[in-house]
Image (tube, rainbow, N blue to C red; front, top):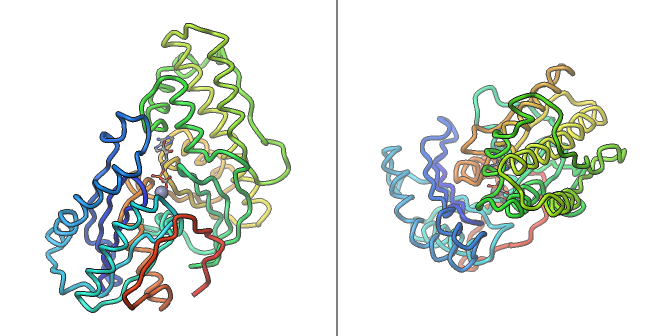
Length: 346
Ligand code: KG4
Ligand code: ZN
């Protein structure tokens, strides 16, 4: 079966073709980063208008790359939520109308289920059950995953998500949007990095010893603000040192909580997904910690950490196999706020 995946929940239009026998055939992405950078963040109305411009050419591109036509499609999977309503409506209405004209079913996919399953697109995919760390712009969650739709929340952020903390801290340091990659790059320039000396700045490790699997990152951002106010004007070296220490703090807490989650569940399989999963410091720490405990850790390839159509096509294929989430009829809706816990086992 051939599934077209459509992602348009935020600032990336992603299209992909997934074949249930052959795997991923093609994927294409347009990122709106440059357009939103001017405003320092995503402008929802501009995002929706841009998705409309991109969705058809990208569909043509993936069909051409895979040497397929619209008539070859068996189903269309689309992100129904969570995300920006207007942006979600573009992908949803496109998927619904195309499927209607082709007389094929649609599959409504939860964006986070897409992220969660993205590592399964890689060679040597992890087996169920596993512990998943989902770290994106909107979420920081630890989950026990026993199968498709079998997600048990183990820990969550009490305030800012990890990606949000990266983005807000980057903004404080005068870096562009999106902040995560920019901050990570700046941290590379830090003296602490190059000379392996103790950082000149020290930031807290929030909830490191809380005894549970929850996170809290908003205090870290405030601590960065206090630090930078105290050392005004901040020279480039100090800025890089703060970025380094911030990244150390956040990745240390994420790694420690992942290891606690593995210990508490008795599982030896960790999966990392979402935009912050692209962070190389986080990967370095997780690789070392899981190696010490003889656990396996899996990541999506870098381009599938952030939003993309491939993860939606794949999650759609899993749902189609299980015969759940398929919809028919004329009406449709989006779910800008959709809790992953509401998802059902097939
Ligand atoms: O998963 P994603 O593309 O979108 C959401 O569903 O939120 O994640 C985007 C988030 C942003 O906050 C971005 O700053 C962060 O992931 N991010 C990173 C890196 N690459 C993306 N954070 C830290 N280091 C990175 N290399
Ligand atoms: Zn996402």
